[in-house]
Each structure stands twice: as C-alpha cells, then as structure tokens.
Image (cartoon, rainbow, N blue to C red; front, side, top):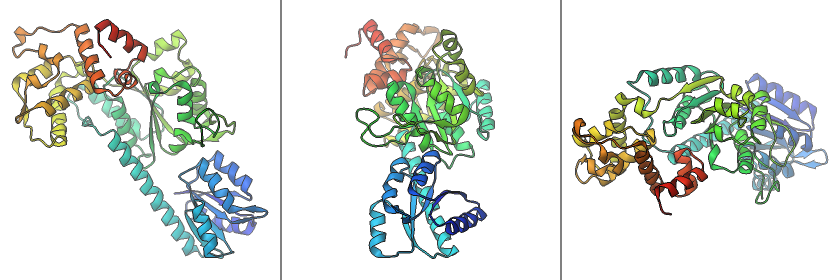
Length: 445
C-alpha cells in the first residue's frame, strides 16, 4: 500500500483519481495548488505524488525540487495534457520519477503504481543491506542456554509484533543494538526502515538535527534541508541507543513525539507527523537519573512500556563457549583461514574470564585470536593480555583485580578505536571520564 498525494486544480480529476486509488487499497490525500501540496507534504510522509503540471497560475515543475528537498524518497509522477518530449525531459531534470499523459487509463495508473512500489522496495532493501554491511558482526546468536537470556529472547519475540515502546536494559557491550535489530526484523514493520541513533556520540544541537531534521540555514553548516531520522523511519522503527545520555533540552521534544506523534525540525516551526515505533536502550539506572532530576519521569514511563533486560556475559557462563566458537567461525571465514577451534588452555581462559566488556570484548578477543593464529587452532598466547591471567589449572589461577581488568579493556579499546569519542562510546562512558581513567592508568595518547 502506498501513501499518495494527488495534486490537480481540476476537481473531477482529483475526485476520480482518489476514488479509483482508494478502491485499490491505497491511502490518498488531495491538494489543489502548489502551496497546498507543499503544506501537505510537510505534514505527511508520502510515497508517491501524482502532480499536474498546470496548477492555475503555478508551474508544477517548479514544485518538484521543493517537494524533494523535504522528502528525498518521493516518487513524483507528472500528469499533463500538454504532452511533449521537451516537457518530459524538463520534469525529469527537476527530479520527476515518471511522466503520464492525460487522459490516462486505469492500466496506465496501475503500471505507475507497480513501478513506484518496486522502486521504493528496492531502495529500502538497498538501505537495509547497506546498514547490515556497515554493522556486520558475528553476534547474531538468538539461542541461549541461560534461563534469564531465554526469558528475554522469548519476551522480545512476543512483544515484537506489538506497537509498544520498548526499553532494552543491560551493561555496555551486552548486545542491546543486536536485539533491537532483531525485534524490528520480527515485527510487522520489518519491510520498513530501521534508523539507529547513538545518543552519546552527538552534541546536543546535532542530536536534535539528527532526530528531527533541520531547515536550510537553521545553523552554521546547514546548507540544505535535512528531513531527519524520524521522517526517514516513518512507518518503520527508530532505535535510540544509550538514551540515558539524552540531554534535558531534547527530552521534552522526544516526549511530545511519543505522546502526539508530532515534531518540528530545527529552524522550522511547521508541525510534522510520523508513524514510528520507538525502541530505546540504556546501560544506566534511569530510576536514579529520574530521582537526580537529569531524566524526565514522564519520558521514562513513556519509554518503559515494555522492558527487556539483557544479563551480562559473566552471568551467562553456559553460553560463553558457544558464543566464542560461533564468533571464531565468522572471523575464520572473514580472514580466509580454516580454524578448527581453541586450544584447551585458551578455551579454559575464555570460560574463566569475567568479560567486563561483555559480548563486545569477547568479539574483540576472538577476532584478535583469529588474526594471530598461525596454525588451525587459537592458542592462549593469541588472546589479549587480560586473559593471560587465566591458567589452565583452576587451582593455579591468579585472578586479576577489577581495576586490572578495566585497565586492560580500556587499553584494548583505545588501540582499536579510531578516536577518543568512538572509544568512549564503545566503553559506554563520556569522554571526560575516559580522559581521567587514561591519566589514572598512565595510558599515553
């Protein structure tokens, strides 16, 4: 089903087109002028616009770039009784998707709808594949031998089919983003976009622009209109990672959107609407943040309609070997190797280590082992330094202190991250805290 805007100054054409489209299960709205069409497009997310080139004194071609500036995904089909190759070429140059001559038959409209649906489906598929490639990882294992994790996965599958807001809670690195992606894929919105925004990685003013969009000239560097993630995820899902870092200035705007499905772009007071299912995640205690006054209580309750708790890896010892072996298969193939597994000493160390960085730290360790392994087995010496404390014989184990584990993990993340900002995001702390810890442990730039 498409959401279609019919723009024509002739009442009979608007009425007949609307009736025919609605009889074929399409959603339709009408506009009689360029200004009305522009306003409708700002209030609703349309997939297709059927646009007459002659709108009284207005030229429909001039409206095309204005509509596309607000909604880059739009498929605009030009309708005109003044058929000519030159007109078609000019419309295409301005961004029109296709061209249809008046009078048109139902078969021609059918063909246009089919073509637009295929194009939109392909674009969504390409966007999804691009997102998957950017975030390719071996962690997508949705089986567990741990009772807590089994309950979380069962509840996630159950709630996926609803429209309820979901709050995923767990320590940094436990796989909250992975679970959010899975919930979207299990939902009725799976064919629609999934947007992911990491709240700690953006400055407050940039986060507002990323979420709600901005108008050209709204701030320095805003050289063009930006529709924002909410508009881009209309009819889909928006995942807000580490929402506990959301600044107080943005919290009322998000609350308004959750309550009324309305929002405004930065620098543009025009109210807009979008149908977006929200999933949020946090590694923070939001109840304490509410008591401290840094997180709105009403927003917390709006977000926490359905809560999913992911246990840390140290509380899932029965899953560690399975996860490590799955990751090794992935990284073995990624590095064009034929690794059969871990040596007994390496596997014992992996199972004994408490994994303060959770799945993310385990993945990093296994990837390192896969890269360094010279034969067909990952040895203990191929794993990170933190695991070298783990001896083969449990009676000989010299367990590291929590401080030693933290220092080792911070060093490892700093080495693999491209910037201090990225390292802080991976660790789930702010840059100032990371800077202090570097000084404490004597870690050089």
